[in-house]
Amino acid sequence: MQSMNTLSWILVGILVYTAGVMALNSRGLLPSSFKLSGPILTIHTKRGRAFLGWLASPKRLWRAWGNLGVGIALVIMVGSFFAVLLSAVSTISQPQAAGFVRPQDALVIPGVNQFLPWAAAVDIVVGLLVGLVVHEGGHGLLCRVEDIEIESMGVALLAFIPMGAFVQPDEESQEAADRGGRTRMFAAGVTNNFLVTAVSFALLFGLVASLVTVVPGVAIGGALPGSAAQEAGIDRGDVLVAVDGQPIDGDEEFSAALADAGREVTVDRRSADPITVERSLIATRAVVDGPIGTGTELTHVDGEAVYTESGFEAALSGTDVAELRLAGDDGDTPQTVRFPVGTFVSTVSADQPLRQTGAPDTPLIIHSIGGERTPDPATLSAVLAETDPGQTVEVVTYHGDSEDGDPWNGERNVYTVTLAEHPEADHGFLGVGGIQAGTSGVVVDDFGIDTYPADRYHAMLGGTGLGENPVTSFVTRTFGALVLPFLNTVDPNVGYNFAGFNGAVTNFYAVSGPLGAGTVFTLVNILFWTGWVNINLGIFNCIPTYPLDGGHILNACVEATAARLPGDASARSVGAVTTVISATMILSLLGLLFVPWLLS
Image (cartoon, rainbow, N blue to C red; front, side, top):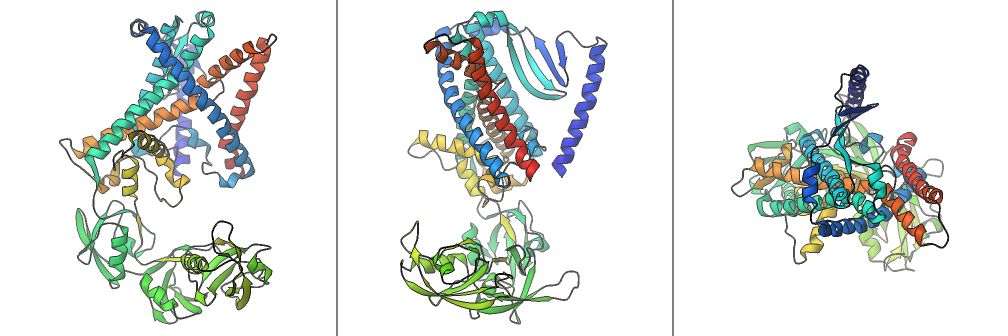
């Protein structure tokens, strides 16, 4: 809702600005170098042509650079065509599965695009300006190399928002140039963007590896709502370094220390005062429409008070069906719910072993297999891993009937099942799906912190060095850096996207060397976003559609291919092929942006 409000204000500002500029233009008050087309304002200049002419003097070198760019652009064009087309088809067939469901996420505007936060706005703008200058500079340079006259250069604004720079070749001179020269000219911009990305990421990885380290402790990305940690005042940016005086370094040591502690624990924080936390159990994840909702506090198991995860597990270990007491809200009477202990599964596959023995295709809780209790998915997998295909086992479940599929209020059922062969492993197969985490689909937490993956981001940004194969490591880290701003969409197990070393995140890292932490973090942020923006700018311009560079390169490739075919290919047929491919890409891009939004 916040970003939608921001977008609305930006749109209002664009309308007001456009109306004012159009009024000035209608009265002839704008300079002759300003040209207006709706909300698009372009500022033209002829300065800089002499400098480009001097820079273009080693023509053989620049032509080789241009040929390299053509090869790179062609590979990306083919890849982007099929990637966008297949993604659009997948989005139309399964719109709810799409991760990017908001059209405004296509705009490179911090605060409007959910993956580009306000905290990184300056760094993103710097990266965008660098990208636009080197991109259009590449076009201008190759114009001089190929003896194509430049009519003007300048910048384009969407009202007051910089949208790009441009080099406007003279049309007659461009048409007079040979096809190879025109193609090299159009490819030069994206080649420069990729070069900037390579340089930026090389410097980024080097700086992070040599100057930045992860501080010891547990990095706190946030406290869960209603949790003990939130009640105690633990917040984003805290780094926990000890539990009851016992030093900790990482999640495993933290969990082990909590397991040995009592209900009240005192945690030491880096750069902050120690704080005492009175632990209580809350459900951090729960099956939809189940008896326990997310955020609910659990206080008793079979009348016994429980406050910790270990206490909860111990209380459930000796019972098939427990009685859980849930804390009431705002003075409400505490609620008691029935709780069969096992692993929650949502589907029982047809024509598979458990279903063939008479189990209904409704959600159920698997209590045990072959006499071995299965209170959670990990235990269920471990028990099945010890079985063999064809083995007969007794499976105990809790489920409702075909009309009432509520497994928590269901009866105990026993099935004698002959296990099938697992399709991907060498053990028995039961034939269930939709397995939910936790005990009976409920995950509990007695402390309530959400850890920030500082170690993972540090490693992905080169913190562990380039290893024995620097080239492979560099390429791998480059692809990893590209997904960092939306890593949570790619890997839902990661709770946070990376937006740079900004705000509270800087508490999780230390800086060595003569430069101060602020200087190093500023340099690293600028390098990260400059590399990220430039590679995306290059890939975007390689999409084979007009008016992007990829559309012009596509037209030249179609012309070159047609010239080698028998017979005379008319300009109309070449244009038709180019138009079909270009239109396909435009429709696919629009489908990616708007279909999930319209159908969600």
